[in-house]
Length: 447
Image (tube, rainbow, N blue to C red; front, side, top):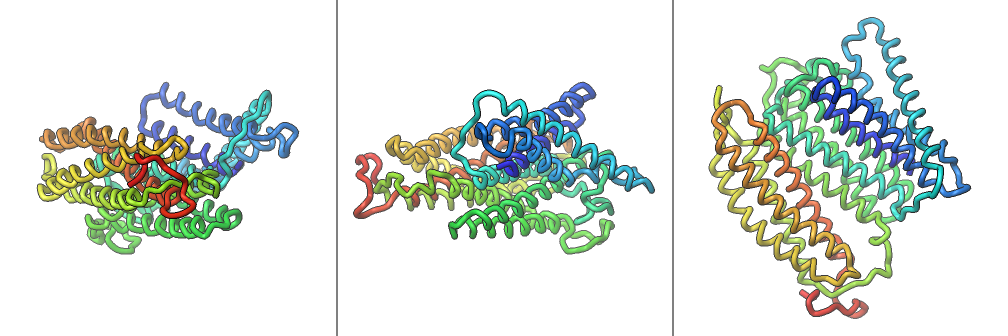
Protein backbone atom coordinates (compact mmCIF):
# COMPACT_ATOMS: atom_id res chain seq x y z
CA UNK A 1 0.00 0.00 0.00
CA UNK A 2 2.89 2.38 0.72
CA UNK A 3 4.22 1.66 -2.77
CA UNK A 4 0.81 2.50 -4.25
CA UNK A 5 0.44 5.71 -2.23
CA UNK A 6 3.97 6.74 -3.18
CA UNK A 7 3.20 6.32 -6.88
CA UNK A 8 -0.10 8.16 -6.48
CA UNK A 9 1.79 11.03 -4.86
CA UNK A 10 4.25 11.04 -7.77
CA UNK A 11 1.41 11.24 -10.31
CA UNK A 12 -0.10 14.21 -8.44
CA UNK A 13 3.30 15.94 -8.35
CA UNK A 14 3.76 15.43 -12.08
CA UNK A 15 0.36 16.96 -12.78
CA UNK A 16 1.27 20.04 -10.74
CA UNK A 17 4.71 20.20 -12.33
CA UNK A 18 3.20 19.95 -15.82
CA UNK A 19 1.06 23.01 -15.16
CA UNK A 20 3.98 24.84 -13.54
CA UNK A 21 6.13 24.32 -16.64
CA UNK A 22 3.50 26.08 -18.74
CA UNK A 23 5.04 29.22 -17.25
CA UNK A 24 1.96 30.68 -15.53
CA UNK A 25 4.05 33.45 -13.92
CA UNK A 26 6.42 33.81 -10.97
CA UNK A 27 3.77 33.91 -8.23
CA UNK A 28 1.72 31.05 -9.65
CA UNK A 29 4.90 29.07 -10.28
CA UNK A 30 6.03 29.40 -6.67
CA UNK A 31 2.54 28.44 -5.48
CA UNK A 32 2.60 25.34 -7.66
CA UNK A 33 6.04 24.41 -6.32
CA UNK A 34 4.64 24.66 -2.79
CA UNK A 35 1.76 22.41 -3.85
CA UNK A 36 4.24 19.77 -5.01
CA UNK A 37 5.79 19.75 -1.53
CA UNK A 38 2.30 19.63 -0.02
CA UNK A 39 1.53 16.57 -2.17
CA UNK A 40 4.36 14.66 -0.48
CA UNK A 41 3.00 15.67 2.93
CA UNK A 42 -0.49 14.56 1.85
CA UNK A 43 0.84 11.16 0.72
CA UNK A 44 2.52 10.63 4.08
CA UNK A 45 -0.64 11.80 5.85
CA UNK A 46 -2.77 9.19 4.06
CA UNK A 47 -0.23 6.46 4.82
CA UNK A 48 -0.26 7.45 8.49
CA UNK A 49 -4.06 7.39 8.62
CA UNK A 50 -4.14 3.86 7.19
CA UNK A 51 -1.83 2.41 9.88
CA UNK A 52 -4.00 0.59 12.46
CA UNK A 53 -3.75 1.76 16.07
CA UNK A 54 -0.84 -0.06 17.63
CA UNK A 55 0.00 -1.56 14.24
CA UNK A 56 3.28 -1.79 12.39
CA UNK A 57 4.99 0.14 10.91
CA UNK A 58 4.51 3.34 12.85
CA UNK A 59 2.76 6.25 11.09
CA UNK A 60 6.06 8.09 10.73
CA UNK A 61 7.71 5.04 9.16
CA UNK A 62 4.78 4.62 6.80
CA UNK A 63 5.21 8.24 5.70
CA UNK A 64 8.94 7.66 5.19
CA UNK A 65 8.20 4.72 2.90
CA UNK A 66 5.85 6.85 0.83
CA UNK A 67 8.51 9.56 0.56
CA UNK A 68 11.12 6.98 -0.45
CA UNK A 69 8.92 5.60 -3.23
CA UNK A 70 8.02 9.09 -4.41
CA UNK A 71 11.65 10.24 -4.55
CA UNK A 72 12.74 7.09 -6.38
CA UNK A 73 10.01 7.45 -9.02
CA UNK A 74 10.93 11.11 -9.50
CA UNK A 75 14.48 10.12 -10.45
CA UNK A 76 13.00 9.89 -13.96
CA UNK A 77 13.17 13.68 -14.25
CA UNK A 78 16.20 14.55 -12.13
CA UNK A 79 18.49 14.46 -15.16
CA UNK A 80 16.28 16.98 -16.94
CA UNK A 81 16.66 19.47 -14.10
CA UNK A 82 20.27 20.19 -14.99
CA UNK A 83 20.69 18.30 -18.28
CA UNK A 84 23.37 19.81 -20.49
CA UNK A 85 24.02 22.76 -18.14
CA UNK A 86 26.13 20.84 -15.67
CA UNK A 87 29.23 20.72 -17.85
CA UNK A 88 32.09 18.86 -16.21
CA UNK A 89 30.49 19.22 -12.79
CA UNK A 90 27.75 16.73 -13.59
CA UNK A 91 28.56 14.39 -10.68
CA UNK A 92 28.28 17.21 -8.13
CA UNK A 93 25.07 18.51 -9.70
CA UNK A 94 23.59 15.02 -9.73
CA UNK A 95 24.48 14.46 -6.09
CA UNK A 96 22.92 17.79 -5.07
CA UNK A 97 19.69 17.20 -6.95
CA UNK A 98 19.28 13.57 -5.90
CA UNK A 99 20.23 14.33 -2.30
CA UNK A 100 17.84 17.27 -2.17
CA UNK A 101 15.03 15.23 -3.74
CA UNK A 102 15.34 12.41 -1.19
CA UNK A 103 15.73 14.82 1.73
CA UNK A 104 12.58 16.77 0.85
CA UNK A 105 10.54 13.65 0.02
CA UNK A 106 11.56 11.75 3.16
CA UNK A 107 11.03 14.76 5.42
CA UNK A 108 7.66 15.61 3.89
CA UNK A 109 6.46 12.01 4.02
CA UNK A 110 7.65 11.53 7.61
CA UNK A 111 5.98 14.70 8.89
CA UNK A 112 2.80 13.83 7.00
CA UNK A 113 2.81 10.36 8.50
CA UNK A 114 3.22 11.71 12.04
CA UNK A 115 0.33 14.15 11.57
CA UNK A 116 -1.84 11.47 9.96
CA UNK A 117 -1.12 9.09 12.81
CA UNK A 118 -2.91 11.37 15.26
CA UNK A 119 -6.58 10.85 16.02
CA UNK A 120 -8.89 8.35 14.33
CA UNK A 121 -7.51 6.03 11.67
CA UNK A 122 -9.00 5.18 8.31
CA UNK A 123 -10.12 1.82 7.04
CA UNK A 124 -10.36 0.83 3.40
CA UNK A 125 -11.57 -2.21 1.47
CA UNK A 126 -9.31 -1.35 -1.46
CA UNK A 127 -6.19 -3.51 -1.38
CA UNK A 128 -2.72 -2.51 -2.50
CA UNK A 129 -2.88 -4.15 -5.94
CA UNK A 130 -6.17 -2.46 -6.81
CA UNK A 131 -4.85 0.87 -5.51
CA UNK A 132 -1.72 0.56 -7.65
CA UNK A 133 -3.81 -0.41 -10.70
CA UNK A 134 -5.90 2.73 -10.17
CA UNK A 135 -2.70 4.81 -9.90
CA UNK A 136 -1.43 3.31 -13.15
CA UNK A 137 -4.76 4.04 -14.85
CA UNK A 138 -4.59 7.64 -13.57
CA UNK A 139 -1.07 8.02 -15.00
CA UNK A 140 -2.29 6.65 -18.34
CA UNK A 141 -5.22 9.07 -18.33
CA UNK A 142 -2.81 11.95 -17.82
CA UNK A 143 -0.72 10.55 -20.68
CA UNK A 144 -3.86 10.72 -22.85
CA UNK A 145 -4.43 14.33 -21.77
CA UNK A 146 -0.86 15.34 -22.63
CA UNK A 147 -1.07 13.43 -25.93
CA UNK A 148 -4.30 15.22 -26.78
CA UNK A 149 -2.62 18.56 -26.15
CA UNK A 150 0.29 17.57 -28.38
CA UNK A 151 -2.12 16.79 -31.22
CA UNK A 152 -4.28 19.85 -30.55
CA UNK A 153 -1.22 22.11 -30.64
CA UNK A 154 0.05 20.33 -33.77
CA UNK A 155 3.30 19.64 -31.91
CA UNK A 156 3.63 15.94 -32.68
CA UNK A 157 6.85 16.53 -34.63
CA UNK A 158 8.25 19.34 -32.44
CA UNK A 159 11.02 17.00 -31.26
CA UNK A 160 12.46 15.61 -34.52
CA UNK A 161 14.26 12.51 -33.25
CA UNK A 162 13.59 9.42 -31.11
CA UNK A 163 14.53 7.74 -28.76
CA UNK A 164 16.77 10.76 -28.20
CA UNK A 165 15.53 14.34 -27.97
CA UNK A 166 17.62 16.74 -30.07
CA UNK A 167 20.50 14.33 -29.62
CA UNK A 168 20.16 14.22 -25.82
CA UNK A 169 19.27 11.10 -23.89
CA UNK A 170 15.52 11.48 -23.32
CA UNK A 171 15.96 11.62 -19.53
CA UNK A 172 18.72 14.24 -19.74
CA UNK A 173 17.14 16.75 -22.11
CA UNK A 174 17.19 20.05 -20.15
CA UNK A 175 13.90 21.39 -18.86
CA UNK A 176 15.21 24.88 -19.62
CA UNK A 177 15.08 24.11 -23.36
CA UNK A 178 11.52 22.75 -23.29
CA UNK A 179 9.56 25.66 -24.72
CA UNK A 180 6.48 25.86 -26.90
CA UNK A 181 5.61 22.69 -28.78
CA UNK A 182 8.88 21.07 -27.72
CA UNK A 183 7.75 21.16 -24.08
CA UNK A 184 4.40 19.49 -24.78
CA UNK A 185 5.92 16.78 -26.95
CA UNK A 186 8.83 16.01 -24.61
CA UNK A 187 6.64 16.13 -21.48
CA UNK A 188 4.39 13.57 -23.18
CA UNK A 189 7.42 11.32 -23.63
CA UNK A 190 8.34 11.67 -19.96
CA UNK A 191 4.79 10.77 -18.94
CA UNK A 192 5.20 7.68 -21.11
CA UNK A 193 8.27 6.73 -19.06
CA UNK A 194 6.24 7.08 -15.85
CA UNK A 195 3.48 4.89 -17.29
CA UNK A 196 6.05 2.28 -18.33
CA UNK A 197 7.54 2.21 -14.82
CA UNK A 198 4.06 1.92 -13.31
CA UNK A 199 3.11 -0.94 -15.63
CA UNK A 200 6.29 -2.89 -14.78
CA UNK A 201 5.79 -2.38 -11.04
CA UNK A 202 2.13 -3.42 -11.22
CA UNK A 203 3.06 -6.61 -13.05
CA UNK A 204 5.53 -7.48 -10.28
CA UNK A 205 2.82 -6.85 -7.66
CA UNK A 206 0.31 -8.97 -9.55
CA UNK A 207 2.72 -11.88 -9.99
CA UNK A 208 3.57 -11.78 -6.27
CA UNK A 209 0.10 -11.35 -4.81
CA UNK A 210 -2.60 -12.29 -7.33
CA UNK A 211 -3.74 -15.85 -8.03
CA UNK A 212 -6.33 -14.98 -10.69
CA UNK A 213 -5.24 -16.07 -14.16
CA UNK A 214 -7.29 -13.27 -15.69
CA UNK A 215 -5.57 -10.55 -13.66
CA UNK A 216 -2.11 -11.96 -14.41
CA UNK A 217 -2.88 -12.27 -18.12
CA UNK A 218 -4.21 -8.71 -18.25
CA UNK A 219 -1.16 -7.34 -16.40
CA UNK A 220 1.17 -9.08 -18.85
CA UNK A 221 -0.88 -7.97 -21.84
CA UNK A 222 -1.04 -4.44 -20.45
CA UNK A 223 2.73 -4.15 -20.17
CA UNK A 224 3.23 -5.55 -23.68
CA UNK A 225 0.73 -3.07 -25.12
CA UNK A 226 2.42 -0.21 -23.21
CA UNK A 227 5.76 -1.21 -24.77
CA UNK A 228 4.22 -1.40 -28.25
CA UNK A 229 2.45 1.92 -27.66
CA UNK A 230 5.67 3.68 -26.70
CA UNK A 231 7.49 2.23 -29.70
CA UNK A 232 4.71 3.31 -32.05
CA UNK A 233 4.85 6.82 -30.59
CA UNK A 234 8.54 7.04 -31.45
CA UNK A 235 8.25 5.46 -34.88
CA UNK A 236 5.43 7.87 -35.67
CA UNK A 237 8.13 10.59 -35.54
CA UNK A 238 11.01 8.84 -37.29
CA UNK A 239 9.27 6.26 -39.46
CA UNK A 240 12.04 3.77 -38.71
CA UNK A 241 14.61 2.98 -36.03
CA UNK A 242 17.40 5.56 -36.22
CA UNK A 243 19.53 7.72 -33.92
CA UNK A 244 19.92 10.41 -36.58
CA UNK A 245 18.89 13.99 -35.80
CA UNK A 246 18.61 15.02 -39.44
CA UNK A 247 15.13 15.79 -40.76
CA UNK A 248 16.18 14.27 -44.09
CA UNK A 249 16.48 10.86 -42.42
CA UNK A 250 12.99 11.00 -40.90
CA UNK A 251 9.80 9.61 -42.44
CA UNK A 252 6.97 10.65 -40.08
CA UNK A 253 4.03 8.26 -40.32
CA UNK A 254 0.43 9.49 -40.08
CA UNK A 255 -0.82 5.91 -40.05
CA UNK A 256 1.26 5.10 -36.97
CA UNK A 257 -0.03 8.31 -35.34
CA UNK A 258 -3.59 6.99 -35.75
CA UNK A 259 -2.72 3.58 -34.30
CA UNK A 260 -0.78 5.26 -31.47
CA UNK A 261 -3.77 7.43 -30.55
CA UNK A 262 -6.23 4.53 -30.63
CA UNK A 263 -4.00 2.15 -28.71
CA UNK A 264 -3.51 4.71 -25.92
CA UNK A 265 -7.20 4.56 -25.07
CA UNK A 266 -7.14 0.76 -25.20
CA UNK A 267 -4.30 0.76 -22.66
CA UNK A 268 -6.35 2.99 -20.34
CA UNK A 269 -9.30 0.58 -20.56
CA UNK A 270 -7.05 -2.41 -19.81
CA UNK A 271 -5.70 -0.95 -16.57
CA UNK A 272 -9.13 0.22 -15.40
CA UNK A 273 -10.32 -3.34 -16.01
CA UNK A 274 -7.43 -4.71 -13.95
CA UNK A 275 -8.48 -2.43 -11.08
CA UNK A 276 -12.06 -3.73 -11.35
CA UNK A 277 -10.92 -7.37 -11.34
CA UNK A 278 -8.91 -6.71 -8.16
CA UNK A 279 -11.89 -5.20 -6.32
CA UNK A 280 -13.56 -6.90 -3.35
CA UNK A 281 -16.94 -6.87 -5.15
CA UNK A 282 -15.54 -8.74 -8.13
CA UNK A 283 -13.92 -11.38 -5.92
CA UNK A 284 -17.04 -11.89 -3.79
CA UNK A 285 -18.47 -15.21 -4.97
CA UNK A 286 -21.70 -14.54 -3.06
CA UNK A 287 -22.54 -11.47 -5.16
CA UNK A 288 -26.10 -11.48 -6.45
CA UNK A 289 -26.47 -12.66 -10.04
CA UNK A 290 -29.34 -11.69 -12.30
CA UNK A 291 -30.61 -13.07 -15.59
CA UNK A 292 -29.83 -10.66 -18.41
CA UNK A 293 -28.08 -12.50 -21.23
CA UNK A 294 -29.36 -10.20 -24.00
CA UNK A 295 -27.80 -7.30 -22.15
CA UNK A 296 -24.46 -9.09 -22.30
CA UNK A 297 -24.52 -9.07 -26.07
CA UNK A 298 -25.65 -5.45 -26.17
CA UNK A 299 -22.79 -4.38 -23.86
CA UNK A 300 -20.22 -6.10 -26.08
CA UNK A 301 -21.74 -4.49 -29.18
CA UNK A 302 -21.43 -1.10 -27.47
CA UNK A 303 -17.70 -1.64 -26.88
CA UNK A 304 -17.24 -2.40 -30.60
CA UNK A 305 -19.31 0.62 -31.66
CA UNK A 306 -17.39 3.03 -29.42
CA UNK A 307 -14.07 1.55 -30.53
CA UNK A 308 -14.96 2.20 -34.18
CA UNK A 309 -15.98 5.73 -33.26
CA UNK A 310 -12.58 6.18 -31.61
CA UNK A 311 -10.87 5.02 -34.81
CA UNK A 312 -12.92 7.41 -36.97
CA UNK A 313 -12.04 10.30 -34.62
CA UNK A 314 -8.34 9.46 -34.78
CA UNK A 315 -8.50 9.35 -38.58
CA UNK A 316 -10.12 12.78 -38.66
CA UNK A 317 -7.59 14.36 -36.27
CA UNK A 318 -4.45 12.96 -37.83
CA UNK A 319 -5.25 13.08 -41.55
CA UNK A 320 -5.49 16.86 -41.66
CA UNK A 321 -3.51 18.37 -44.54
CA UNK A 322 -1.13 21.19 -43.49
CA UNK A 323 -1.48 24.46 -45.42
CA UNK A 324 1.26 27.15 -45.13
CA UNK A 325 0.08 30.23 -43.19
CA UNK A 326 -3.50 28.96 -43.05
CA UNK A 327 -5.69 26.50 -41.19
CA UNK A 328 -5.12 22.88 -42.22
CA UNK A 329 -7.55 21.23 -44.64
CA UNK A 330 -9.74 18.67 -42.96
CA UNK A 331 -10.50 15.37 -44.67
CA UNK A 332 -14.20 15.49 -45.55
CA UNK A 333 -14.47 11.70 -45.72
CA UNK A 334 -13.17 11.32 -42.16
CA UNK A 335 -15.42 14.10 -40.86
CA UNK A 336 -18.53 12.55 -42.42
CA UNK A 337 -17.54 9.09 -41.12
CA UNK A 338 -17.02 10.41 -37.58
CA UNK A 339 -20.25 12.42 -37.49
CA UNK A 340 -22.36 9.65 -39.05
CA UNK A 341 -21.02 6.94 -36.77
CA UNK A 342 -21.55 9.30 -33.82
CA UNK A 343 -25.31 8.85 -34.37
CA UNK A 344 -24.93 5.08 -34.10
CA UNK A 345 -22.74 5.46 -31.00
CA UNK A 346 -25.23 7.84 -29.40
CA UNK A 347 -28.22 5.51 -29.88
CA UNK A 348 -26.31 2.40 -28.76
CA UNK A 349 -24.86 4.08 -25.66
CA UNK A 350 -28.24 5.52 -24.72
CA UNK A 351 -30.02 2.16 -24.99
CA UNK A 352 -27.36 0.19 -23.10
CA UNK A 353 -26.97 2.89 -20.43
CA UNK A 354 -30.73 3.02 -19.79
CA UNK A 355 -30.88 -0.77 -19.59
CA UNK A 356 -28.04 -0.83 -17.05
CA UNK A 357 -29.82 1.75 -14.88
CA UNK A 358 -32.90 -0.50 -14.61
CA UNK A 359 -31.07 -3.10 -12.56
CA UNK A 360 -31.95 -3.33 -8.85
CA UNK A 361 -29.88 -1.31 -6.37
CA UNK A 362 -28.26 -4.50 -5.09
CA UNK A 363 -26.30 -4.73 -8.38
CA UNK A 364 -24.60 -1.37 -7.93
CA UNK A 365 -21.94 -1.55 -10.67
CA UNK A 366 -24.63 -1.55 -13.36
CA UNK A 367 -26.45 1.48 -12.05
CA UNK A 368 -23.26 3.45 -11.41
CA UNK A 369 -21.80 2.72 -14.83
CA UNK A 370 -25.16 3.35 -16.51
CA UNK A 371 -25.40 6.79 -14.87
CA UNK A 372 -21.77 7.56 -15.70
CA UNK A 373 -22.18 6.58 -19.35
CA UNK A 374 -25.28 8.71 -19.85
CA UNK A 375 -23.65 11.74 -18.24
CA UNK A 376 -20.48 11.25 -20.29
CA UNK A 377 -22.61 10.80 -23.40
CA UNK A 378 -24.30 14.19 -22.93
CA UNK A 379 -20.95 15.85 -22.22
CA UNK A 380 -19.33 14.17 -25.22
CA UNK A 381 -22.05 15.36 -27.61
CA UNK A 382 -21.67 18.94 -26.36
CA UNK A 383 -17.86 18.79 -26.62
CA UNK A 384 -18.07 17.21 -30.07
CA UNK A 385 -20.27 20.02 -31.36
CA UNK A 386 -17.94 22.60 -29.79
CA UNK A 387 -14.88 20.92 -31.32
CA UNK A 388 -16.46 20.73 -34.76
CA UNK A 389 -17.54 24.37 -34.72
CA UNK A 390 -14.17 25.71 -33.55
CA UNK A 391 -12.29 23.60 -36.08
CA UNK A 392 -14.50 24.70 -39.00
CA UNK A 393 -14.43 28.39 -38.03
CA UNK A 394 -10.65 28.53 -37.79
CA UNK A 395 -9.16 30.37 -40.77
CA UNK A 396 -5.54 31.05 -39.79
CA UNK A 397 -2.51 28.97 -38.90
CA UNK A 398 -2.74 30.20 -35.30
CA UNK A 399 -4.55 27.65 -33.14
CA UNK A 400 -7.23 29.29 -30.96
CA UNK A 401 -7.42 28.25 -27.31
CA UNK A 402 -11.07 27.26 -27.72
CA UNK A 403 -10.13 24.66 -30.36
CA UNK A 404 -7.43 23.16 -28.14
CA UNK A 405 -9.80 22.95 -25.16
CA UNK A 406 -12.73 21.44 -27.04
CA UNK A 407 -10.75 18.91 -29.09
CA UNK A 408 -8.64 17.76 -26.13
CA UNK A 409 -11.62 17.40 -23.80
CA UNK A 410 -13.59 15.63 -26.52
CA UNK A 411 -10.78 13.09 -26.86
CA UNK A 412 -10.37 12.29 -23.17
CA UNK A 413 -14.14 12.14 -22.60
CA UNK A 414 -14.27 9.59 -25.42
CA UNK A 415 -11.63 7.57 -23.58
CA UNK A 416 -13.74 7.64 -20.40
CA UNK A 417 -16.82 6.58 -22.35
CA UNK A 418 -15.02 3.67 -24.03
CA UNK A 419 -13.56 2.52 -20.72
CA UNK A 420 -16.97 2.74 -19.02
CA UNK A 421 -18.40 0.49 -21.73
CA UNK A 422 -15.58 -2.04 -21.24
CA UNK A 423 -16.18 -2.09 -17.47
CA UNK A 424 -19.93 -2.45 -17.97
CA UNK A 425 -19.43 -5.37 -20.36
CA UNK A 426 -17.11 -7.03 -17.84
CA UNK A 427 -19.54 -6.57 -14.95
CA UNK A 428 -22.38 -7.83 -17.14
CA UNK A 429 -20.52 -11.11 -17.58
CA UNK A 430 -19.57 -11.25 -13.89
CA UNK A 431 -22.95 -10.55 -12.32
CA UNK A 432 -25.42 -12.00 -14.81
CA UNK A 433 -26.12 -15.46 -16.11
CA UNK A 434 -28.98 -17.66 -17.22
CA UNK A 435 -30.21 -20.89 -15.74
CA UNK A 436 -30.53 -22.36 -12.26
CA UNK A 437 -28.79 -20.59 -9.44
CA UNK A 438 -29.30 -17.16 -10.89
CA UNK A 439 -30.96 -14.80 -8.52
CA UNK A 440 -34.50 -13.79 -9.35
CA UNK A 441 -34.56 -10.44 -11.07
CA UNK A 442 -37.49 -8.16 -11.65
CA UNK A 443 -38.96 -8.18 -15.14
CA UNK A 444 -37.45 -4.81 -15.89
CA UNK A 445 -33.89 -6.15 -15.51
CA UNK A 446 -34.38 -9.03 -17.97
CA UNK A 447 -33.17 -8.84 -21.57
